[in-house]
Length: 612
Image 1 (cartoon, rainbow, N blue to C red):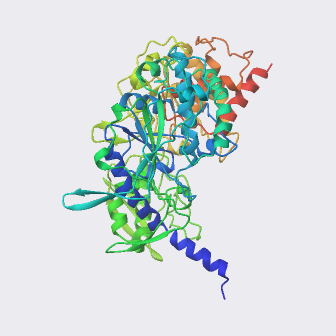
Image 2: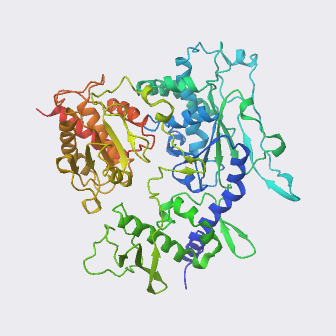
Image 3: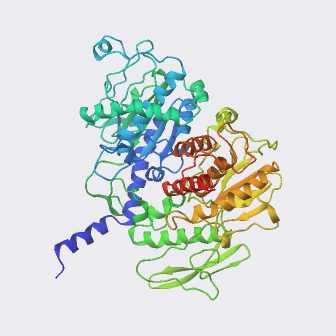
């Protein structure tokens, strides 16, 4: 007889199945996220990585605000995740909408409740000084007599019904803001609001504790070396968060005009309902369990599926029902893996915990994914084995255009590609006084996923873009390739190419540090002759960024002058690494190096400065 605990785990596992998760995500988008986006179509729609990326088929960009920076007692303002491109995009568009979700039974994740409000407050205060409106702060009693325009959108549990072509449309949503969460404001210019705005459910004690730390974070932000001059020119109103969830109401005939507000709105949308357990739902075809925050922790349920793949095949996955969902996802993921493997892109083979293995042909490589086990290419088609029940069947499929979505870095809209780098606003003004290089080669025309780092002669990209660029001699002169040698498709570059098989810090905590000396020596030789250099890795977000950081800090001094010596006597501190990362991120907004990789860069630079 099975124990009650084993039965409960089995029931929970069935309720949190792959089909239920995908159906819940599709439901949240079609019933809520899409409606909110249509209320303010002029605003940019952003996804907060990584959960938020699942909740819409198209985004104007991504951002990365961590919930851990907003946990109670662990409040923080990250100098390595400044997300300045979000402020630029909000300034240009008049505001932005950020989508995220949580499965902890809360209305909003901590990233929206506290991390982003802290971020907006710190940026507003830093910009206030730059705009020369900084002044002594007034007391709470003085502030009560000061007129301050507030936008109040009250919470309500009722629903809003609107006639739409003879049918009723119910939208359970609203915006909620705190009335005056901070006791501080600037006396001489109340229009530029520098107060800390937190939602109503954050306790007064927590608000006060966060408020005491804001000025320290502002000082840390100023010390990071971020150049806010361009942002100060384009941002005409201070940033301010608004909160939207499925628990509150917006009257569709009274939607406020963004231009009428005296602030730049950062509308924070929590995609899912606040439920502590799955809720049973049904339609004319299938019944399923709604999971709040279903997209959270995708490694535990997605089975290799990515947001881009899901939305490309969403109709097929949703209409197929729970019985066919797992098999359909396996086919989609395997086709995408084969497509990328045949092009030399990063395509690791997924392993199943059941122990069932795919048939492997003689001579096939394991785990690399370049030569797909059990597949072969025939002209413009490929043949692969797909699992079907207890056996395998052979399927022939035409190749189709499928971009690598592992990096979540590129998004396309009907109007064309939308990039969120600050460099698209005014690239040359950002960090122009920090690093210069004597190379005279100008950046080429826009290449998707390709990022010049100012005037240094250095560039960063992902593997797909990097291998495409290598065939064009007019783009870059030299290449540093940070991927597995078996995935490389570069040839005939002679001494202008170096291949470094650097592993992620999750798999090897010293791989990057061990290969940095070779990368820096190669870069120095090329930079001395004013040659341009491209550094690329699988996703263009972690390893290639860290290699570029090591080169910048080894070959350039703090004034931006190229150093002809090896800089052995230069003392590098952690703050220098942060400042250089801020500069790099101003040209490559998708730069998100892991903490383990940054630690290896610092250790390499520290050991280099201490060497005799």
